[in-house]
Image 1 (spheres, rainbow, N blue to C red):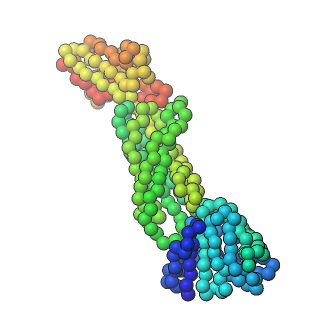
Image 2: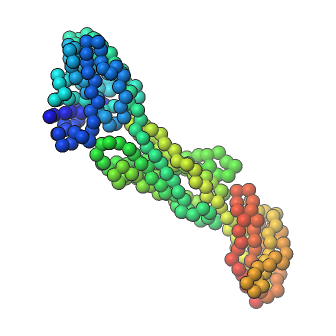
Length: 296
């Protein structure tokens, strides 16, 4: 049994043997004197080829009005010529001796595609990176083959509008694409991944959101009986107050508050001991504490 598939408006692109025919299931439209049966056929874009078989009609060829494919009418099921379609609605005419004798429609539904996203950490310190990764899963009945897929990564920072951060292209493994990217959020940010390209065959897919919190970067240094404190980003903490804590045994106890200058820094005199600074949450940032600094 010989079966041929034409992709789009191209000529015959593939000849299937009986052993490989199962990978692409033909959808057969029978051309009867009453018209095509079924008159409207639904297939998956990029996969199921549609073949036309004469069944008491004089039709010689099938012509699609959008130019997507022209295919000969098969005399029987033993030798089929079919077209694989892009997503959309494709109307056609059955032509005999230059005249239209019947009409029908092929509806190619977008093939399924799913996108996932995950972050390597739920929170990072201001200025540090976090790795986003995920998969793009395609679902077609055709044999697996390597392909490249473009993944758009969208970011929505705290109190800001979302925007496209980057486009990542990755190579598939079977039906699955594994993608990854490193990002540096400057405030709490929600990320999504989407596949917006290659919509001729596949649906547009958007992942659920993953949020990455940002801790302020806090530096505390001790020298000659003084503590120097710096908090970044300065704009979020300028003129704010932080808590000074002193280690007493295994516990940290608050011993006072420090008011930061306009550049989110401060310097104070301290007695000998081990100190740290606890920074409260601010819009777009989570609370955190500095590493200990020892004054001698």
